[in-house]
Length: 405
Image (cartoon, rainbow, N blue to C red; front, side):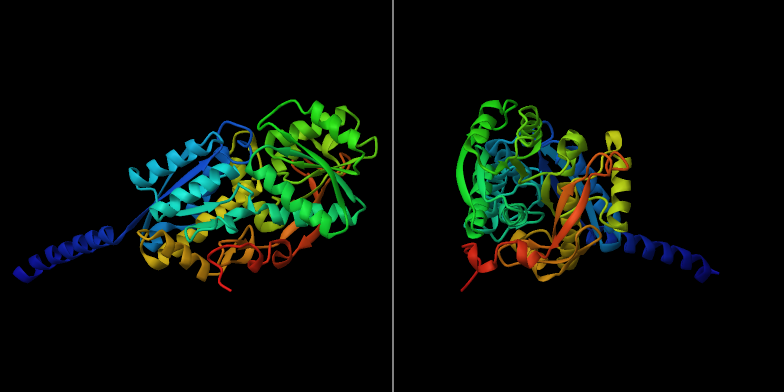
């Protein structure tokens, strides 16, 4: 009788001990979404990046891997000092292990340096400067979605092949715009084209009239828009008002997101050629994710490539942490991420190189004519798939200190 009484007590004690052991073994992971929540890039980044990160956590099922994941977010206001200060506070006081999004090159470079100093992890999705995997690469940073070299090879190369042999640039006056002009100019020259001139535009700005008149007066066949977000939207709208494309000059949107085209409408943006690594309507998997995403977004907006990148990189980061069972050494976590092939529903299979560049295919799209578009977000037709090993800069040409030989 005493044995029968003692048995359930013993089992209960064992169950309690097991629960305590599980709790003790659980690794807490804190991810910071640091992007633009109020400015020129808020449609590209903003709340959509937070939603994408949460969907990634939901799909990963962290509790099955002994992980507990928390997500925090902040607005860096497109200011490097603000971004660096938030990153430092997150790392020092708030126990954040990884930061993603970025979405402004000058800010991303600042976050990258703080991350290296604190030995944490930074995965940039929205900022374009290829210097993140070039001279300013670090063991703690990965560049996920696109970069200025890929955009230059994609859109710049395509436009020259189509006869756009002379160019004039409208360039956002900060790191991203300057880097994009530099890298696109190199592609233009390599393919036999010529840059006739350029003008630096304040970032951000709403009035492009004087800059467009300079571009129009240059006689260049192509006006290259080395800008993004609302700057791109405003410059394309005002180019239409000036009748620039009707006059025979072509616009090259060197960084255009689906949210920009949606804002412009196909009537204004029709025929625009652009390069993206993701589009919501590419296949069944991208459509399924985009439907889930839209249900959580005000207005039902579809995800941009930046949002898709946040989803993708959070998934891969969590896979690496599940393997290492630690977030203590950021460089070690990044090394693990590089050692593991990437694979997710939005970008498919890929790799992360030694310089931190994530490699996947890019796509050359053309914006549909209004008559071709069947719904509000039916914006692109695919012209070409550009293999990742052809569109991104070769590993040995970036001058990244992490690359030997």
